[in-house]
Image (cartoon, rainbow, N blue to C red; front, side, top):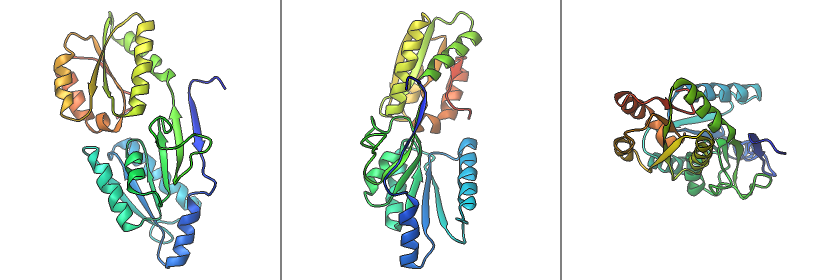
Length: 251
């Protein structure tokens, strides 16, 4: 297949629901799902509603046939490790999460099934061995859409008349964001733009990055849990700098 945007389902040989149902029968208690989200945004709220709705359709009614422990990191990525370690102590039957939290879940347990709703580069980030045969206790959806970076820059150029200098803000410790960065850099060169990339690894790096990117005509933010959690800070600094900014996510 030659499509540049794909969604793969990395399936295990045994479905994630099998251990959940089996453990419930053995223990006599409600099977428990540990649900970990990065931040309680509108998008995450919609995902939770869709998740709970589909569970009901399959006969898993919260409080009656299944228990769900919801957690939101809402802060530094270190919270992912704390929450997934808590899930391991609680001995939940399955962990449901996405993005940067998946690696923390993998480090917390090799026994509890882990299902990720979306990960941009599960193979490159070491979550699974391959898309066809993920192996281990992890499965989920791989969402790769490199063509969107070029489209976002085209829209940005339409809005910002005379765009010549583009700044890119990226958390280089997140493999999905690095892929987005590379696609944005390539698309910017195709459009004849000057590109300056500013790397961050923690929230404290954001303010200094804005100090360094003065002179840019616009900013492209590569999505990842760190920058999404700090989106209000980024938007505030961009407004102060009067810097048009392109984000990957609506919130």
